[in-house]
Image: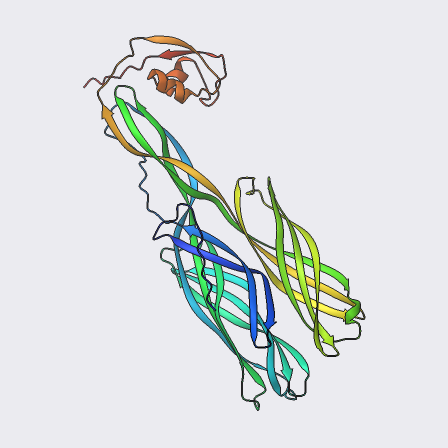
Length: 425
C-alpha cells in the first residue's frame, strides 16, 4: 500500500532540506466479505524545512569619509551541517524450549535510551531498539517476549566540534520479524534504521544596524534574514505511578500492554513550559476464546523550567517511553511508566543586514554652528546625531553626558556642528 499526499509549505524552495515526522493518530481495520481487509488510518505529518545559506555580512566600511556606524553584537545559531546514515539492528531472540511457535500475532519496536557523542567530524549515535513480540504456540498458548537490540551509527558532518548542539532523529525504515527453524526455538529480528542529525554552532556576529556620513550623502539597502538563536536541548524524565482497576482482568493472564503518550496542550510562559498530556494504555489479556483489549487513559501534567524559555520560543517536544512496568494484583494493575521528555528550544530572530552602500553628491545643509534640541519620546543619541549630522561623542561631550544610553524626554541638548579635525604635518 502506497500513500501519497501533497503538503503546502510557505517559502519552500528546491534545494532546501526537509525533515518529516509521521504519526499514526488513528487506525481502523475491518474484514469485508470474509476475504478482504479494509484499513483506514488518520496520519499527522509534521514538516520542518531548513535552509543553510551562506550570507555575507558587511562588518566595516573604510572607504567613506567621516562615516558613523551603529554596531550591535548578535548571538545566533548557525547550521554547521546535516547528515544521515542507515544502520541495521539484528538479533536472534530465543523463546522457551517448550514453545513450538505457530504464529507471530503482534510486534512492536521503539527506539529508547538515545545518546550522542561528537568527535572528529562525526556524530556517534547510540540507542536501543526495544522489540516486543506476541506469539502463538502450536498448543494454543499465547506468549510475549521483549528484548533490547543495541543501535549504533556514525554520521559524518564536517567541522563539527564538542561545543555544537545536535538534533538527532531515528526513523524505522523497514522491519523483518520471522521465525527460525522450529528446532531453534527462536525468532529473527532485523530493523533498518535511518539516523538523521542536524548540528548547530553558536556565533557572535558584529552587525551594522545603521550608518551615515557627516560630510557625504549615503544610500544603502537592507535585506531581512530569518535566523535562529538561543538554541538549547533539554532532557528530563517524568514518572507516572497509578493503580488501575480493571475488573475484567481479575484472575486472567496479562499478555501485553501497549503504551503511547500524547501531548494534548502546551503552554509557554516566562521560564516555564507546561504540558497537559495523556498516557494511553492498551491492555491485552486472556479471555476464554482468545484475547480481549481494554483501553485506559491516564492524564498527566508536567513542567520544564529553564531561564532560556520565554513566550517567543519555538519548541519541539518528543516524548519517549523509557521504562514501563505493570503488576497484576487481583483486579488492580500497579502501573509505573517513566517518560523521557526531549525538548528543543530556540527563538526565531529577524536580522536586517546592510546589503549595499553607495556615496552620492553631498548636500551640505549644516549651516549652524550649534542648535538647541529638546529630546522627544523614543529619541536616542544615535538618532539625534544622525538627524543633525553630528556625532554621539561630540553631543555627549558638550552636554556632559556620562551614559550615552540615558537621555530623557524634554531634556535640553546642545547639538554642536561636526568639525573635521585637521592634522598639521
